[in-house]
Image (tube, rainbow, N blue to C red; front, side, top):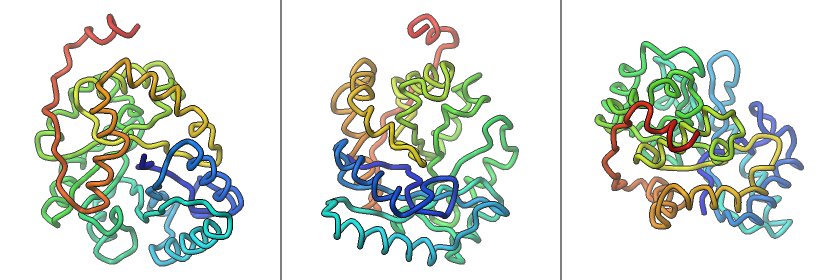
Length: 256
């Protein structure tokens, strides 16, 4: 398995606060069955602005500690970039980075206010040869109210990553309902822990898999948890299933 979204790099955002905590999280990830972690520290203008070279140095330290402690796990550099009109400039100036230097870019949106510049940012990324991936759409209140808002983005090639914790209801019942609906209807392409300081989600992966088994096929689960992420790391194209528009009210009857 590949963890597509994590905040394990120490002391660069609101994630791990020490290299010791980072090592502990990596041990838990390995025990849970993850063989690779995509490291996605926040990049948010005026808040989290650690440049790529500093992040890279900290990842080098983590890799050395993994060798010392016999943790056999691969680490890949990326960012979770907070939406900004300057996202292409950040990437071109090597201030923020794509996933493993691929064309794929992970970015996040405001939790409660739908961004007016979203389509502009997406088209700017595409013109720059990048492939946009939006993090945890199920957590955004405006998507919970109308998941079909994602259809226009899917039609222009945007991909989506959801959190394992959402599947277990860790962000609330509406988020849980939404993520299960999105997964079932082919809106989601990757899953990640979004782990920060606490590695509880790694200890709950068996419960996550049980919930996923209720929603989609084992082949689909393999795509979400591993195969699609491998394609990203190799900078290859991903075959996506056509999304199924969501019938309003249907999901509440099934999952409430």
